[in-house]
Image (cartoon, rainbow, N blue to C red; front, top):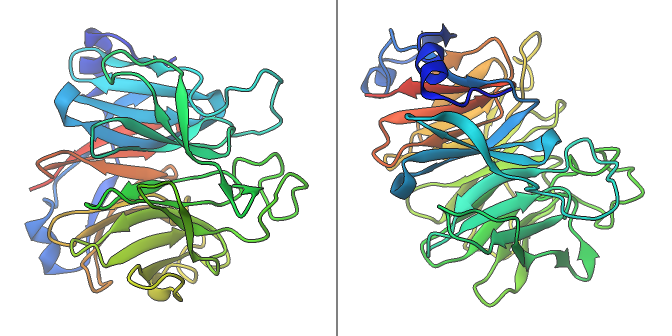
Length: 323
């Protein structure tokens, strides 16, 4: 069970995990060598998609296998926020990960969800402070074919929605799944008018996605064990070839986790879940350091002032203070 009261939350914050690995002096401007990852909540099957909501002073995150979104606040710790979150069908699902994954706010402050089970991008049709499992489809098909299982998403300042679509929400979680309709795992853009545009079809397992500050290029994680890479995608072209940002394929042996969720701060620094924890890059792909963790990290969120990073870390949720 997730912690759900103030006393438990206070006790949880006394527990820490992991360590900071400094690989470049530039890391000193981002995080202190003595920083620690506080365990602020635990007891989940696979925590994902963290989103800091400044207006409500809360962290939302998905527990994908249990089809649930949790809310964490300093006052009350973790508590159920929304259930179901990603699959709302009447019949039982064979998916091992039917829930929501990535979470993001649109320009009007509505909660937008990557729904594995429903195989769509959707908006919650309810206020943030009064959540209900009522969803409006933003994008559910490409060329008449259902998406695999939208995984992570980001908006640009023009109100365009960008998302990745690997097969992890399908029953077999691979490209041979009979339920898979689209022959590739794509990266897409949804225009404000609802038109869906394919941006890339050559990344084997597109996962985390975030914009660099100029909004001309996306950084996309590939969670393929045989191509554990991060790629840059120029979104000025309709369909472009991703270029390699950094590869962890040869250095991931013996470490838990793969390139997964990521965020980029206003200075272009990248915080990316990867083998062994959170990798911190500059905008040129140089690894400045890592937050070393024992369990696999799935994703990260930055606070509004970018002085705190939240990490979904398998059964845990962590908080690390930045400079």
